[in-house]
Length: 159
Image (cartoon, rainbow, N blue to C red; front, top):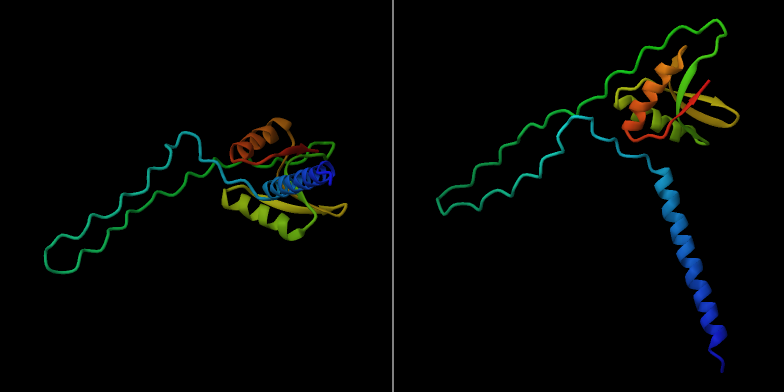
């Protein structure tokens, strides 16, 4: 019996399995929203507290551990306020995603609102677009886009 065709078939099956796994991992990484980046100028989070010391041989129950309050995460600076439309009526908007599902668009918009951005969802052409801001000047939209990129989002300035 010749082993060469059997080895070739097994190699093809292995390559197919690896490509399916890589495609799955790439797809889930693309669909998962990025974790918000820490604000600039804040120190990295402290190491987790050490385990409590073992109870002493004294009589009585040990004292309950003391909860340490954690500071609230620093919110990004508020985005510039939208301006009234220019004479031509076109505004610059920062798009933070386009989804086929309204639920996915709403989830992205809510995540942005929790970070302090005024996000909203628009629907057109079968897509739900998550946008932030409406600016008469492109420079203002670019400043907001930089804040969103610093928070870990991919953005697109549209008009």
